[in-house]
Length: 268
Length: 342
Image 1 (tube, rainbow over the protein chains, first blue to last red):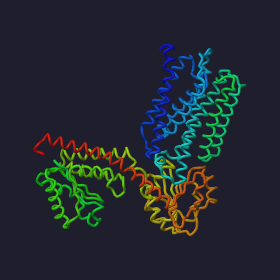
Image 2: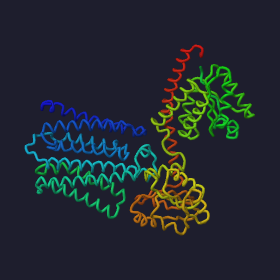
Image 3: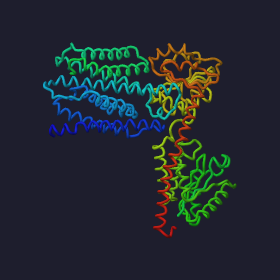
Image 4: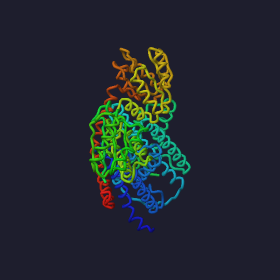
């Protein structure tokens, strides 16, 4: 496959992936409006197809830039979307969280559309450092886990609201038990925290500069997640609080990411 | 060949009459043999449940078949009944609706499908069915399965006990690790406890002002009795509380519960207050991780479920109608292939 061919199919793969997530999102909206929300393989299949297309895009892009395709913020957002879907595909069926797809697709779609607003000016990497590549990829997969924890938390709050308000809608019967959702949230937070720790260690091994803003913000996020997880170990927090924190932390990280990227001297 | 269905059900005959026409497993063989002796009729299935007694037959002459079946049943029971009957597509549609739970007293109930399966299996084993009824009943099972999986007709609880169980599962997932406490050994709480037990709760503690009654109920449901003065001592270990005492005041208030929730290390707590006046202060529902339901809210959940099921009825009828057309088409084709059966 030559470089020209890669460049040619690259945008189409991304359009295809966006359409897959859009299909899943629209399906959810229609089912909700018709009050006929029930487990359906459509979400899982469309998200699965979207994931395959995203994987192909990352692979193609990797061949173009000759490195892990996170050379600009456009690529970072797409890699992060891919990481969220990857973890959903692993975690969703394991926890029987069949509806997680319905909540994951809007988030991923928003990130893929958000990526359109950032310039896609990829350049071929000059320096290859395995630790740096590993550090960057694992960091983003860690954020993928935090992203999915955020999705599980939203599901938790929705289901808790149903239970508190005694509202037996069709969504209520399809959402998983709140105990499962709070467990999934906690495990995903630990997974993300563990991966972020590994990313930090690999960053140190790669002798990455620690003076830039990105490092300090990443350290702050790592510390916040770490503190909350350890506090929860010592004295368990209410699942409602934990879910709110999970959403707040991830959205804060997501919102501040573009600013940090542009203020920081380097993305990696 | 035509399919005939004749019978009585809870809509057309009271239970006193239905029980006179009920057919036990021991009587099925004799009755089927009697029916199959009717001229032009060689396939028959008897469906006898607490809500209906119905006969499905494949016959060349529906009117004669129906008259003779009713004569046999009248002689057997010694009385007449307001029999309804369906022929052609209507009989096929009726069976599909029955198997799918659309003709049941509780719309969308699934127990009837098992009863239809058993009735067919009995007739099949006795050699009372052949290609027409075999195909009809196999189709009925398939229709019932797609109605169940493609619509929301079986969704949710339709009784107070089932609503309590459904809610408990929406909070805890599996109930196998849950410990239940019953406060007050009344019939309502005992019924709810049995519903929870049927889903495999870990253990049940029964506490009542009259200790002997607590012991008696605990023995009945396989739980442990506890004196009423001590119920708060084990409160931090329980996950589900079912309360139905005659106490004139609240036994559990928000102020009492808030410190107990801390002791529980934030595990969720499901409170079911079946008492009138209420045993649990409604404000406890504001506490994090506490879910309080009283008898009205459980009944409301059951009503919401029935409303959802009613809305699904049209989707079910569309699914059934398509399958009725398929079966009737098949029946016409096979009859045309075998002119002697026409």
